Length: 166
Image (cartoon, rainbow, N blue to C red; front, side, top):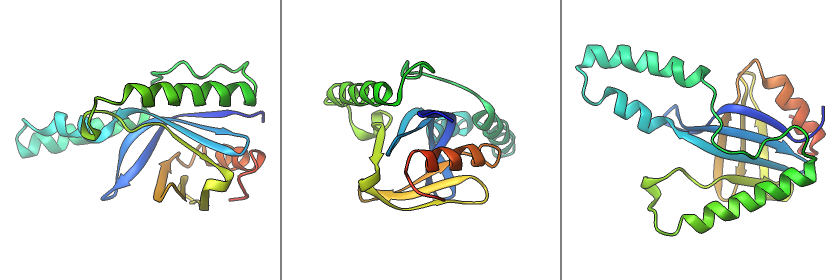
């Protein structure tokens, strides 16, 4: 396996047992990147806010399935021909670009900024039997729902990236 490795439609940031965002997770040498693409909580709220309770439950189940199995890519970071160093340079530039454009928006009005955590910045990395990657970084606990099917590929990528054996 060559790095970087991309995992699409990864769910991120659990609150009350539900993931809040979805996006692209990248494993590179000594670093993990996550680029949020979709606000899952907002989608759930919009889909059920004007429906009666018994229809809202049905809509919630349909939306859950759609959120789990859809694909998206709102950024142009990924190119399989990029080397690890080229990807990391491109990703850092994209993160800086997003930070510069964030000045006028409030926290609740936009997706969170992408996450970049390098080897020295995180601790307590775990990969559960159900494919949930979690670690502590930037004074916060980060949870990623990668899934059982992609768990082995993620474990191998983390090992190759020098991020520890999980």
